[in-house]
Length: 583
Image 1: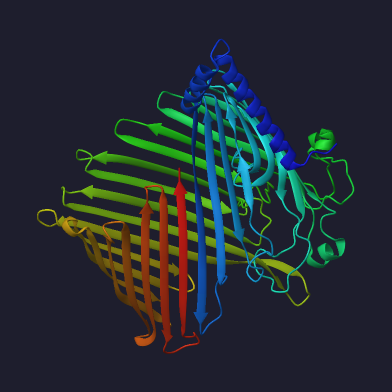
Image 2: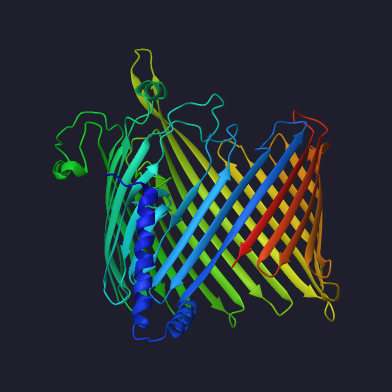
């Protein structure tokens, strides 16, 4: 008999209800009077059961005139959460998300997610859409539909997580608009487990994660036309934390990934990595099986006067895990840093640096070497004046290997080298002034960035933002005025953006509604000639009712006028309405 997902949830909550009733009944089994029993039971229930949660609903209306729409003309999303505490040991958290999505912009199906993670003493159960992190190189940042259980007793050093479910839903047709999110994909199922030891600031964990694409979930004709292949992946990993000395701590992770880019290929017994031949049904080696590893390690030394860190990371070529939505590979880097405070902690300084290179397997046509250095300093001169500054330097060297053919059609390798140096610096100043209850802050931020290379493709970017912020408590008024200037320069073109931004906010209607108004005007100059104008206005209302209900209306109206170039003039309106309720 196959149980539906809803039946499993019903059975689970029925068991919880029976347990609560039995616990309640046992507490009053010796009560003679029915009225006394009822009164005490109600008092017990109010003390032992605590319910918290909230609901948030948002809808956005969108319209544009003079250009192509950049988003859905109508969109809504509803999310909610609920947590129930029963006594000191049972915790039931719920969460759900529902939305409307238009097929012209995303997949033609609603975005609906629901899940719960009830907790009883040292046990945590996961049901529905969950995001469970095992480690960076195994399972991280991937939402799945399924279930799991976590055993984590505070007084017992051995912990365990077991999980499984669907990690990707099949999408087996191709949309004509070819927009992001409409690409066919296989249905993907997986499971994982993490067993770890944790005691006295030390930990050691062993991790296994397996995922497989269902090769029958997408028609072969469509998969062949798009070059889509069903994958299979097994990752074994370990993490560790160990205090080498009192103030010196090591953190690290090592993982090995066995990856089949196409699980339809026939099984093959491997001569290398022979351990994979013994995995049985857990993993099937094939002719295209790839093996790669990843490692990261960090040392942190904490002293009275400073904190020092050193890190090394190496992710092998083509390292993949189906438990991560995105992971860079084929690179290694070494970084280090030091930070300290001085002058009675008024000055804080941090310095970081490192080296990174890719193509560690030597299989790519280009090799990139980056040297990174940065520093930051903050200085609280006094109660009114604060200064901060930062500097960063990025040196990169790319070597491209290509083949040059001579008259006899013989190829010889040739190398092209590309060098780039990027420098950036920033300075910020905040100065407080004002008398009485009126508070004013004058601020100014200046940023500069320059990128230079050996092909004379040099660019410079400048940004200046300065203004005044004022608070007038007698009128409950907050006002801000700033002026912005940005310049992006190359050999052939100079683009400048300049203009003011004004904003004000204060409560109205007996302080029940907060009104915020913002207006900005921006000129765009191309080589000194006016090329465009942008006028942006925003008005927002926020109303809190009975301290638990929050209503927000947000209106944004944008006018863009193009004076020259290929850009179009247009007007754009976005109106958003949000309701939030917490209890």
